[in-house]
Length: 167
Image (cartoon, rainbow, N blue to C red; front, side, top):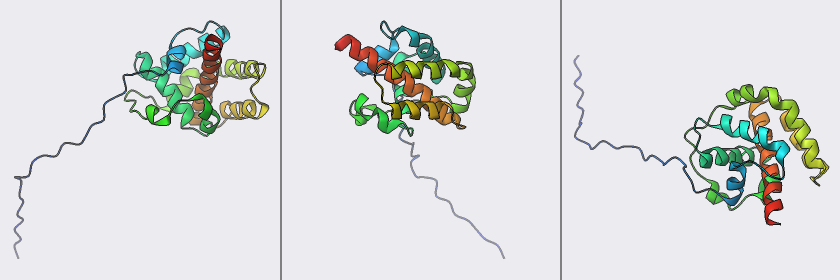
């Protein structure tokens, strides 16, 4: 028995809709994060290393947005709700994002400094429950959670820096 298969190939090729990669604009908070802190100076090294390692590009709009998104999209996100603008503004595609395992590996040596940084946030009035959540995130067995913890620490420091300049 013989079978004949008929294929019609005259259909137009459908190309997938490609979303554009984020290149800006930046929120006011992201602008503050993109430059060295003048008030929270002890966070500058942590801030710069995180921005350098979070994505595979040196574009500040992409670096800072990925820090915000990693924090917001984690279990720590609800803690950040009042710090962030309208969430629809933040819904963008970060094409150069890196894997959390790689970021965590690159920044592992800074873990004790992040824990120290959290204690300094306590001195600025951050509630004990939030300090505990940040410490748990940084000590987690999950690299995704540890990276989100780092991002959250820098985001909170950025908010303090922003508040200092505008307040």
